[in-house]
Length: 326
Image (cartoon, rainbow, N blue to C red):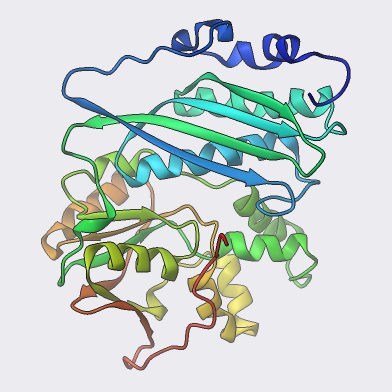
């Protein structure tokens, strides 16, 4: 356990049981119960984050919890699913005591209310290494409506939500870079790194419109490559069309060579999808309705791989293709 004040069951009762929904049975049984309505499918995803790898050990505990939940909700959104429940496993070092757990569970509670999701159960163990936090999210979708990576077709347009590269720049700020920015600008970038915005409203509304979809976790170029590999296609991205925040554009003015790096950086958790050209009006209407920017950045082609091109169609070298897990 983390800290010596509480045993395992007392820690569950005090910190995690208040987060449980009806299916969690008060976290007093060996497993949870989940109903699945007729004609619906459960969509299940899992992600783990490790201190010093996916977040900084000094990051606030409530934001760590919210990022852990949100990266999983982003995976559900990428398949068009609506979030329902989650299962949590923590492996915590002893120095993370009750105060850290209080803040951690407060962060979970805040986002549970925001996204309408509840805890079903999980496990809690001790470790002598860095903290390891694993979360399994469960969503639902109408059977046959799920959006997979494998449906992209030549001629489809490639779209991405939000802006790209802010999380990468935010990590740079935390490591001492971009001191020329104002405090509010640095704070904006750090928040984009620490607290992604999963597109839980947009994803389900793209069912029947997007032919293939993924969330940008490893980097836009790498994740578009996953769509292409699974779909048996290629893609071209017009680098000038990449949606950038005003802060990123200011950095770009003094460091123009960073643009390809932003295209390859990860942790954005935006939705990246392919859709036929005739869906353009509907996509733009959704963007306006939800007040979520959605930008066309390229197209799907025959062949293999992902190409970045400039305004004249010339290839732009990709120096790093994205995050590698191993």
